[in-house]
Image 1 (cartoon, rainbow, N blue to C red):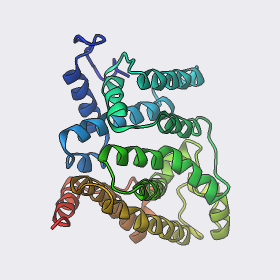
Image 2 (tube, rainbow, N blue to C red):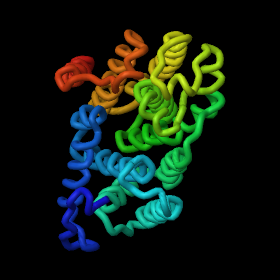
Image 3 (cartoon, rainbow, N blue to C red):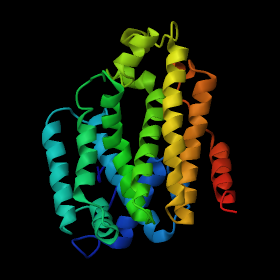
Length: 297
């Protein structure tokens, strides 16, 4: 990972320099977080750097499974190595820039090891092509790959009530469900069908039709059903902003607002995710960020 991104391991502490490590995490986030980065820039420096490290770690774990350039051989061993990497990080022991910064963040903001390990559990569920039979199965997956990240972010933001953790979890599940709708075509091409089988059968949408990019039969109705589910979670989850600092609230509103814009486009044209990846332009994302700042007034 480090070599792929051209990181030069120079410095002093554990062979690393903290400023270089922080710069590396920022560079990864800026390059990879096409939507989340627009929210992260609203945060104060200490929180922003911690979030960059958390995102860079999540990106590395995700790439272990999803990066097509990487061999599938020894994948279980590589994930086991990532688990050990987390254990060492919790002890303040690190050998790379991401864990250099993350080790400071887990100590400073009280991020528990079980949440970092839970993220690996979620990514591990993607090792083999699969489908989810029920919403509860998919919800459990979304909790591991997204909601846990939301909880860790809230720990970094700081919060006035533990309800913030629950609301962050709901918002994370909502955003992941929007991801499922947005990425349905490319996921199906990799043999992954996240939309619950019970829902697809209800509306007459087959696995084969998704893989073929066919929007016939009940696809529009299925999208409407899942979108309503996502919006319900979105509505309650966004209440997290009432329990976190104002600038962190801008961050959350920005990220959530961008995903809401993506969902609105999918609802407007349900066949679009079967043709192309739905996204907002940079100008549209900037508008969401500005609206999030104005909401503070």
